[in-house]
Length: 400
Image (cartoon, rainbow, N blue to C red; front, side, top):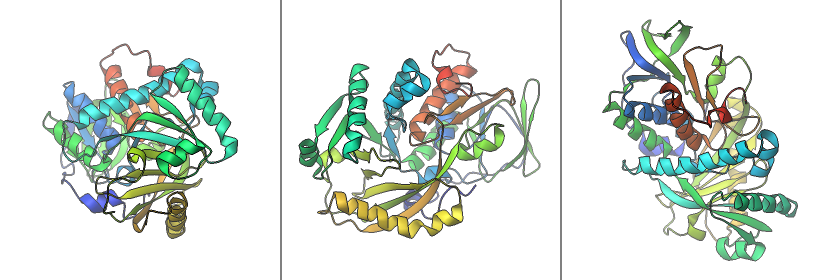
């Protein structure tokens, strides 16, 4: 798949962090992982710490699929609001899904503390009501999170929003627990650490066939070599649908712009992550080099040529949306890019196995919480492999 346009900011800023070889001989391992983005890296890092012998392969260079285009917001708020998710999956499952995302942010912060230059920063998360008619549902969301003690949340009135963020919205929900990260650098840091514990990484290596045996999985590679493992983990993001017989994802195209650096560091209340209740929504964050990023204006299609043709128009619309919120900030677009992303029927990831693919686990963190879902997948799959009891495994299974 064509997952993104050519010039995402993180890839331009950091370039090729490290060179990895392609496979030139047949290999054996405990675990084979397909996909070297942020999710695959989190899974590999976790499994290597547990002592598994892991081989990772990817047809692209490391981190250069969707990870390079990520806007890297870390939020426990799932794309499906809690009050709607409760009606879709039940009270216990919905609340626990939010709690797991909250826990994943904490875990990601602890992992990030071991690395330099991954730019993990704790931030509040602020969601504002795009229209007056959205206030009632947002208030319902606030009351539910207070009821279940999910994060520290505060209700902001119209005057509160103006005081803290300098723009006008009828109401807002301010949460203490958000964060941001540099997913591209984090991916390389995770793999570097895992390599010191035995991980073998190969990029520019295409899997052309998968054969499932009684006690193993065999991957045929484009070089003609084979990779044989006791277990296979598929973490190649939106392209993973090719390995699943039923449709589980819906495609969208999304757009992002990032400003030139400003000569000051404070833009709004604690430089919080900002997003809105509209669907599709826009979202904002700041960066470590004093830029402002705004994304959104999504389209419900997968057509890379059409997506990329629309980029200039969407970039202008995003800049106009920013200037409407913050007319006093002289936002000048420095870079813009577009990408493909996928959602699911309930906004939740798919983590686990299917009967059609024995000895295989999927780590599919679709939607706006891809990185936090990736961390959850790393923990869940580790528990599955070690046959540890985990009462939450059913939450994101293919049979939910």
